[in-house]
Structure formats: structure tokens, C-alpha cells
Image 1 (cartoon, protein in one colour):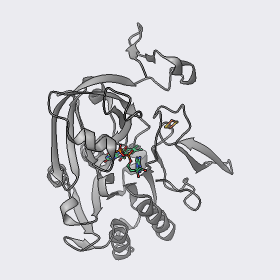
Image 2 (cartoon, rainbow, N blue to C red; image 1 turned 60 degrees about the vertical axis):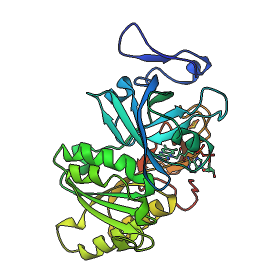
Image 3 (spheres, rainbow, N blue to C red; image 1 turned 90 degrees about the vertical axis):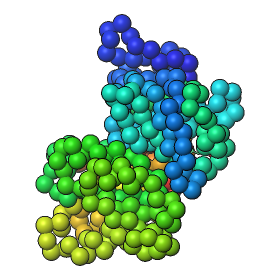
Image 4 (cartoon, rainbow, N blue to C red; image 1 turned 120 degrees about the vertical axis):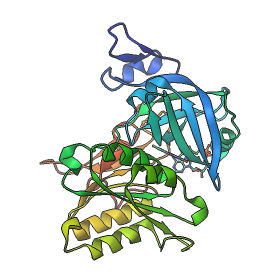
Length: 307
Ligand SMILES: Cc1cc2nc3c(=O)[nH]c(=O)nc-3n(C[C@H](O)[C@H](O)[C@H](O)COP(=O)(O)OP(=O)(O)OC[C@H]3O[C@@H](n4cnc5c(N)ncnc54)[C@H](O)[C@@H]3O)c2cc1C
Ligand code: FES
């Protein structure tokens, strides 16, 4: 990637490199490349960091479920940008925040960066969650997050709450030491239930067990028709889908897949998705461009092995 610039019409943006022929103008309507100053980069839990970045253009149009691709160093190692969900966006302050876990080379380097240093960002990328009234009004909206899958859901909860939607957050982590963003969730003022795999706090089990318990307990009351937004490990999302068949609810899932370009060009992040409406069969879609958010019932859960 070399440059993303604003065209003279003032509305569209173009990528000025060899990828230009592969991406339509419509597809890159709001894609920016910004050199971000790091405002803060602090550890918030075991191996988990929160980084605040000054990116006014991205902050101004970022939506929940979208992500950014970060160039970790100015050298070619690591070569590929790393994708991270947008955890918060403050358009007035021109900043976005990301929650990330140190799991490998790129995130380790990222965790050592200090405020004042700069990082190159591309975004906002992907489709984001659909939280239009058509989807979520009249339902109890249940946000199911596993591990750092909670990050885009906190952003979603904030937006949904400002539209007066009813929200319940079910948040699962391995152990209490990994719990993050409690202050943010309290500020949003939504109902929150926590599950830990080891029982160190809250419900002893997975977030999907918490969801199963809730659905079972509320089968005969007003909450029997919830709408679900889920993000986290593939096993969690698969369980949410299994429950959706048992309890007949709809929803959306935010998928993670290893990514190359993040722009819909390299086809390295394909996922098998059922055709919707009258069409039968499947098509392969790009998690980075057509997703990362997909209809819960359209993912081919049986055969898909999303990382
Ligand atoms: C759309 C999207 C949103 C994401 N949002 C977040 C987020 O908000 N916070 C966060 O901490 N992480 C997020 N991730 C995952 C994050 O991109 C990876 O953890 C990161 O790229 C790892 O970089 P690394 O150089 O440290 O690890 P590497 O050295 O590249 O890899 C270390 C290990 O992690 C595995 N790995 C690498 N990338 C992924 C991936 N995308 N999914 C699963 N396993 C992977 C590798 O196979 C390897 O085993 C997201 C991924 C996607 C696709
Ligand atoms: S990462 Fe290249 S097409 Fe999705």
C-alpha cells in the first residue's frame, strides 16, 4: 500500500498504487490511510493492552464491527499489517482505541511502543454490525463476547444504547485476570453477566453456557425472541449457532480469519457462506471485505474452520 488520497470531488477516496484496478471506487468510499500518533499504550490485564491512536479521519467514520490494519514497524518485518477491531472511536477527539492481546511477533512489538511514536493505519475496514431498527428494535439484544471478542461489542453496545435499545452483555473469559472494559460497560449502563472457564469470578463456564442458561430460564417470557450479536473464538460462535437452531433466534457474528491484504484483493480470508433469499447453494466471501460480520444462519458452520 502506498497512499490513499481524497479526490477532487471531495467525496470519494482512491488508493494510488497497483491495487487500484482491483477495488471499485464504491468499495473504497471511506477508506483512509493515516499516520497515527500513539496517544497512550497501556497494559490493562494479563497480556492485554489498550492503545489509543490519533486518527481523525478514521475516528470520524468508524462503525462497530469494523477494523483497522496496522503496520507494526516501518521495516518489512513483520511484512503484513495486523488487523484489530475498533474498540472505541471518539470523532470529537479524533481518536480510536484498540484492545489487543500479545500472542506473537507483531503484537509483542506493538506492546513496546510508547506515546508519541507513530503507526501507519488503514481503515475503517469491513462491513460492521447492522444495528438498524429493523434488526434490533423490539428485541432484547444479547451481545455475546468471548475473550477479546468483547472489543467490537463494547463499541456496538455504546451505539445501540444511544438508540435506546435493550441490551444484555454476556462476556466470557478464561480467568478473572483477563477481564477488561468493565468500566466502559458500566458507563454504557447495560446489563452484564460474566462467565469464566475456571469459575474464578461470575458464572463457571463459557459465554455460550451463560447464553444457554439465560434462554432456558426465559423461554416463556418476553425475552423469548432475542437478537444476538456475537464475537469471539470460533467454538463459541458455533455454539451460539447451535442454540439459535434450538431456540429459533436470529443474529450476526463477527468472524476472525488470518488476513493478508485486508482489502478484498488477495482472497486469503475466504469463508463459505450460504446464499440468502431464493438462491440455494453457497458462495465464498471475503471476511475482510464482505465481512467480518455475517448473518449467524448463513455461515457454513459444519465445514468452516475459521481461526
Ligand atoms: C477482523 C479481525 C479483528 C481482530 N481484532 C482483534 C482485536 O481486537 N484484538 C486482538 O488482540 N486481536 C484481534 N485480531 C487478531 C489479531 O489480528 C492477531 O492476534 C494478530 O494479527 C497477531 O499478530 P502477531 O504478529 O502478534 O502474531 P503472529 O506472530 O502473526 O501469530 C502468532 C499466532 O497467532 C495466530 N494468529 C495470527 N493472526 C491470527 C488471527 N487473525 N486469528 C487467529 N489467530 C491468529 C498465528 O497462527 C500464530 O499461531 C483480529 C483479527 C481479525 C481478522
Ligand atoms: S485479506 Fe486479502 S482478501 Fe481478505
